[in-house]
Image 1 (cartoon, rainbow, N blue to C red):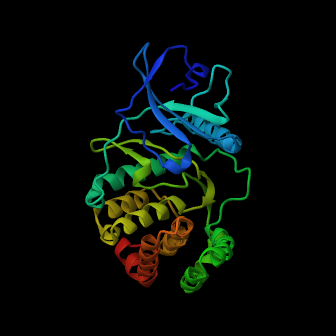
Image 2 (image 1 turned 90 degrees about the vertical axis):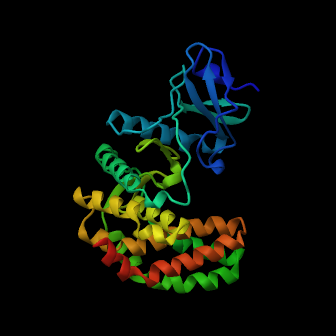
Length: 309
């Protein structure tokens, strides 16, 4: 298989078939781990449709700026010999980043690991500091505006699902009115345990920045807690969640109003996941998501009490 490595390196290379690169398969067309023959360094090379070129270029510029501002645990895209953030080849846009080792996530038990919450909180704190000077060039993303645009599309795809979702959306009415009064901050946009490269007692790296940008404060924390709870509702009151929240609160990460709306925010972010289940017609996950949404909404006061929000 020929890969356009010469745009970055003069060395020959080999594909490391024994290594599986982390990251969502929906984010790209191809993804491989390669090793340079000259110095044995390893890299991840991936290709996406040319229609994503401008978005991927912006993402690379943003990661470069975060790295320059001392944000840790990044694997930024590397510039080519021509000082571009990627290369066109075979009607695809190719990019390369350094390979970072990672351990498999123990899906059945990880929410019981206090240290995972601490290191994920530490990264969010570092990201907030490193991104403070990044200018917002577009209207910040609003999850409630996203939901308003999504519901008519769900009506076309699955009218019965819309009937199930409208009462849930009504339960979020107060949050939808409060959302844009909350602060705006730069967010990873898809911050959950499968987008982290795990080491032994530490966080090795953070990947999949496809949805990064300025959003209403709390988006990353809500996304993370939502994924914890979807994997196992008991994880919402397990050591990882408590260490995450306690570390953030100890560093004054949010104001009191943002903390108050966190359970509602979790439910709102799950609509993006519901879109995935709806579009793929995954009936099992649609049912599980509906149950989880009501679990969150019915227990908002309980979660605020347990989390001391």
